[in-house]
Image (cartoon, rainbow, N blue to C red; front, side, top):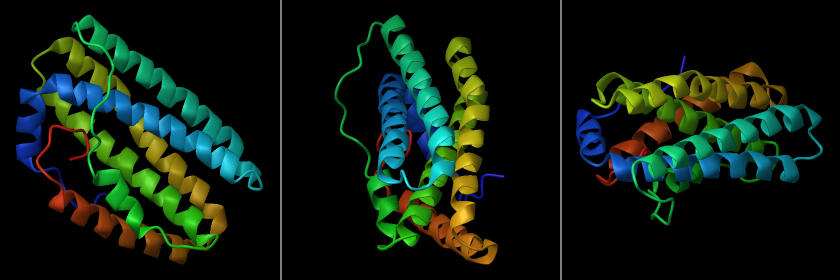
Length: 191
């Protein structure tokens, strides 16, 4: 269960389908950033041993996805390059509290919501893309995104009691829906 508090507006899918080159470039950036986030958490929270191996595996899988999407870009005659990011992740992370363990709990929950939103949107793309290879790419990535969502929630569980965790998931879920509702209409995976 992805725990998303809102569904993607159909207008996003129209923008995405009309500019798949930009969506693919943004997707590659998102995979790279996801790998970087997992690695940064490994370095920052070395005193939490239960984080190390799951985050390492997650980072490797995100890098594999990055490589796969860059391969698709190249097959389309495009190269990986700079792209201004959407404000989504930065605004989502504004919900992160200061102090520990609250900061880590909220960071992990924000990461879970980013993965959940990716999963939802990749499902939409897999079901509507006219290009069968691209549709298959997004269909193949669905299970990983859903698993990453759950991994982040599972990693937060040892830090707080269940009711506290559920309350933060609800609060950050509401915040994520508001951030998405206010996002500019860009051709980005999370906009």
